[in-house]
Length: 356
Image: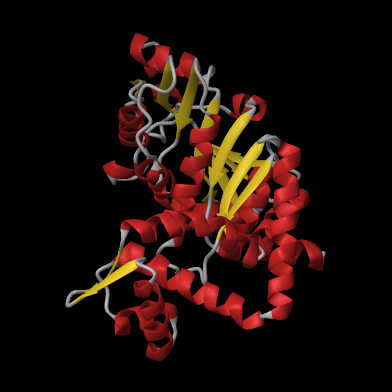
């Protein structure tokens, strides 16, 4: 189906939902409740009504009504252990996502935030609050779906580490033998103590799902300049660094300056100096202010800012309203950026922009 037809269908669906909302406002509320109940059951099933009531902040009566309707439609099954989603329920949940996206006004938010940041694309997932336990998983799923859509033959995909990229890799569905000559590689050295979140681990997992080649970078992220110069003389390290310059798609998490500085072991005094300089975000060893200007740089092995600015396909994943300034900052560096974020941080950025 061509883009024009898609736009027409989207407009007609928007208009239809608007009409239904005006005629039967309670209908939208019912759909939202049932969608939310089905979503939580999918994540946590088997789960009982009381636990579900606590998770959604709904009365047990609301939960009872919604679950009875979902059971009648064959979307869930209820046992002594609690409620579980059925195969039909999973399929329905996937199909409902787009409709719910419009009902919640997320499509309008995406368009508005994209216009404010002036970047390639914005993908927003719903969340009720910053402590929504499932929003990270939803962002990972959305980012994985987008990455899957843009992978082509003969490309190199670069990954950084972190919890957000870990969720993307975990949610990526196996896609073997679909593309030729694809390589997944680490775009930076290891950061932090948790192996499961490090770039090398994530690279191997994604490459296995794609059934493709991979390249790892077994160096710490934070090194002295002398150590870097010494390591770059090693043939294996030199080969990887040269390949990093050929990355076609970069997938990375957006870090707050103070959080990333803390992970690197900087002292409280050093972090204070960074913040006084206006640092709000960190990427690839550079600390940026809200305008995307470098305020501090450290020595690392991995992708460089010059290469970052030239890339045509960038996917950044960031959730939580505390990442608002960091997202704005990173968006200034390369307008070919696709941001995958949650509803709360999107609204915070938009609100701040309107205030100004």
